[in-house]
Image (cartoon, rainbow, N blue to C red; front, side, top):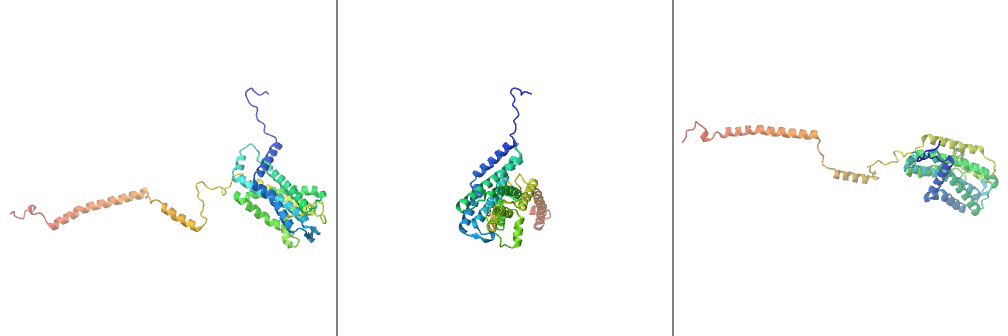
Length: 350
């Protein structure tokens, strides 16, 4: 059927791959234009890698087959870079977009929500991959880190499972973040303790058994152990630890399911300040001072209408009482003083 002259053909929505690619490019541009986000995602893992390897340069780990410390710590920093890009960055950026109303406005556009979220998570995975490559390149170029090329395919599979797991976990944690200013404390407060007990910042071979078992329950230690084992030239192996991959996949599916049913697209009541509300005083001195200022500025109380009517009624009753008393007093004075001389007939005239 031909389109009538003067009428426009209905616009066709772009395909799903095109929309997804546009969202990935948009999220990458947002990250590049944010100095804080770029610094936290790309620079912090490199700073930790350079500082710690500089301190322990020349040290060998007997518990890991006598490998150099750089051979252990470089894969550990790859794991930290992935967690930093896929977990902490997702929590902070998603919470900020929700509190600023960006997610709420997106719900009113023709863009499907799942494409927007998928683009956000895919961009986080790409940033994590770039950060991991940069960490390995710096470790190999500065600290003689040995890259085992036969283990690269298995390492890529482990990285993909970890990116999915930590991105979904970060999306689930945003449900528990009340405001955007609480996102980074929640992210760092939940991941830093795991880094210390999950073979990321230091090996925990001499730690108590219960601590190692507890750390193995969370996804960070299986991820870090797999990377360290794949790039260990003495005791390592290029075979995959399927049990560790199961832990990552289970955490990822559970987190994605939780986020699917509980994710909030609009700011919560705690994240919004009521219109006209005053900020609370932080100290008792300010509260007492504000109380005195409000008491000084308070106008005189106006009596309600009922009380004013009662007051007028009492005043009128009092005036009537005075009016009734006044003639009685005059009569009493006349009785005491007696009549005037010209008015009394019993008194003979002179």
